[in-house]
Amino acid sequence: MGKTVSLEGATLDWARQKFAEYYRRARVPVPHRLARREFAAFPFSSETMMRRHATLRTPEEFAEFLRRESPRHVYYSSAYYRSPAAPTMSEKGWLGADLVFDLDSDHLRGAEQLDYAGQLALVKTRLIDLVDDFLFGDFGVDPASTSFVFSGGRGYHVHIRDERFLPLTSPERRELVDYILGTGFEPMMVVEGHRTDVRSGRTAAVADDDGDLAPSGGRAPRTRRLAPPDAPGWRGRTTRALLEVLRRWEEKGSAFAVAEMKEYGLSPAKARHYAKLLIDQGGAGKIRSHLSLDVFRTDLGADFLEAVVPRAAVEVQGETDAPVTTDIHRLIRLPDSLHGGTGFRVVPLRRDDLAPFDPFREAPVAVKDDPRTPLTYLEEARYPFPGGEVHAVPGATDELPTPVALFLVLRGEAALRPSPG
Picture 1 (cartoon, rainbow, N blue to C red):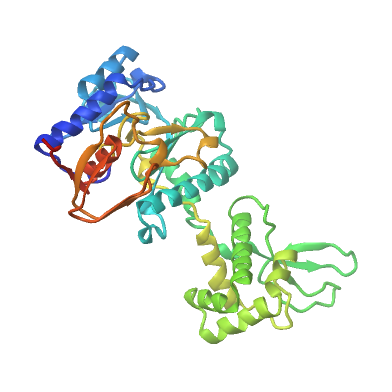
Picture 2: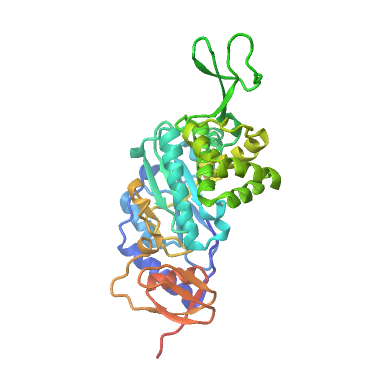
């Protein structure tokens, strides 16, 4: 859970009332295998302790729990237990756990340069890559057993209820995370040595420690090629990333390529040399067309490959919050609950919903015939809510739709001000 801004007095009462109104009228879906899960709530008060170990046996108990607690944050366990209400993990009796992945925008490379809206757009892009490339692709996860949730705050959760994953231990789940992160993968494995037998005409991959000169047995010199883009796993993924780097350099030009190569660790002289080969002499296009790295009279040196190939691999490295996936007792946000740091709904999604999903349009809770709420801004605020972008400086006043006002108050960026009269 991220930072929760402390509320007091009339502001606390107002925010609690808005959450209570939501839970009175909402029909929050009952989680799968309800009676085997632990529930926990963070109260909407000055109290800061989470209330854990709740067991809810029936849909009626579940609905009453939400109405009674009207929690600022509410969670349920990814694990299933014999006795969810037991006070210790050993007494609970672990039966298995859904496989859960969590992507938060503040954990992503490059997110620190973006505002909140930009971070949410970035994390959604990375989520789609994680799901399609790793989960559905490499892991063969059945989409029918997979659900997606906008967390209401900084990112998204993926829940997998595939029976094959339920009994996995924490170390076994760590192996899945390590694969996604590319831990232990040697990027230079994407470069394959090939040698053609002159007598047979057959070409085969060879070990990289062979000499380059043709021996007397009739074999031609070794050539170097990239692994096929459709090769399984990280080899194909790295080739695709390297080809994208070359395409980007072709599009941006030599100066851009030189600047990136210098960032990758090549000397200015080497960077200019390789930019000339790749951009000015068309080598990048030849590599993208034929996958051959032997497209010049002078070779692409090992220094180039050892600098650029690992950086290309990093560009497609998966990203996920490892502790969430590896923790077999994890508490995760309840779908369709409200997030206590934004007032946004924790939105369940299907795979086809992800690309068009707009948190600022679809996550605020609609309030029928609700009057606008008067605010004073405490911090600079800029958000792309529909109906007009919020953009204000500290000390400015405004009257906004209640869901937008709730968002700003819960984030500590605005305070309620009394209505005139």
